[in-house]
Length: 134
Image 1: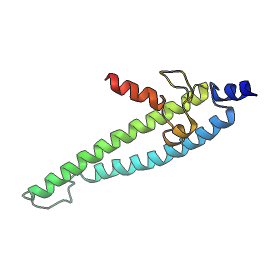
Image 2: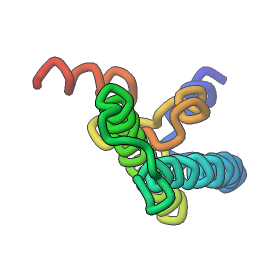
Image 3: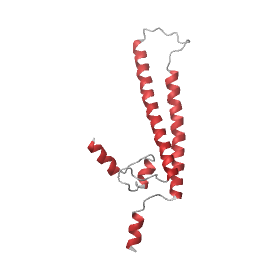
Image 4: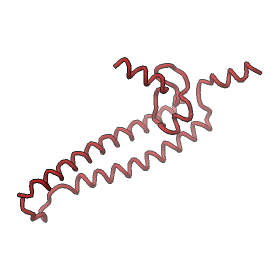
């Protein structure tokens, strides 16, 4: 019986059912992220001065604030685009049946971690070790 438990603990990939569960989670996260990205892009586009803007240009403080807000929205949009790319890459790994396998150690990333960070490519230990090296 001990050998059976040990073998289960050392499984090397997720089952098709588990992969389907992760796929559904990732697809829902992509849908939400794309909506958020669209709102950010609209906010950036909407902060441009258009022809109907007749406000005096001496409102320097307000304009500076608008520029900062626009830059912040652009940064958030870039992060959101990267997040979507990472999630799509995770979908490819699901199709390849390599999803959930740590790129550094080759061990299975715990399901709890993948439920929180579905685009993770490393175990927490491998990620912390790589941070220490850099």
